[in-house]
Image 1 (cartoon, rainbow, N blue to C red):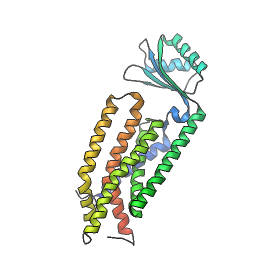
Image 2: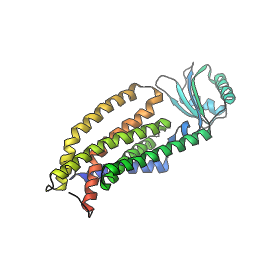
Image 3: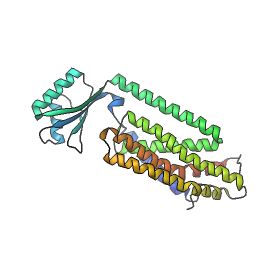
Image 4: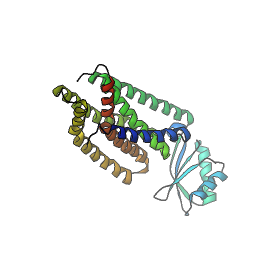
Length: 285
């Protein structure tokens, strides 16, 4: 495959994904969980068979009009409501029992608005620090063109993942930050392998056309990248299908991030480096 010759196709695919995500972020925003916004997250089990409309109506009657209700595969309901103090939460669940019959509170997690804001700020700081350290690491190990391209590929992976979470309104909680930080390390590892090949091949074959060198470098690392990513994705998809609800968003973010990371390391990072190198007045090959 001529990876460099078809680079405009790869750019177009990424551009469509990123633009769709950007539009969704502007008009829909992100579905932030209570970790960031503050609130109370309940998992309820009812004795009687109910639908979401009945549960929503009961919450409205007890004064909670903004409840986000989701029926889970096991027949229980996950409900996200504004933050309630413990006494108010007990009063609310008792009122629901009187309206809907017997219910069992399987779990109840509450985070105040102040704590949610603090978690959000710390998560943002962690991402900024990770980006800065990654820039320093790549800049020390490679020349500036490799460093710049590597960071662009990382941002591509993060924004593509973030865009899909916005489009489908999947909930973003504190584990999403952990997933993003993991994606940073995993994605840059694949990209660096390809960059190492390019650097080695340029030094060994100075007379070859640059596009040939880049294509050969990608081909030499292609099998390794695909095998590593597929073996990881098999494990993650298994967790996504059969794991618990508490880890689902973390695993989903990891799955998307690794898939995008593999794609960008092969089809985006090296072609961008190629374009930058052609336009640079200080090419070294």
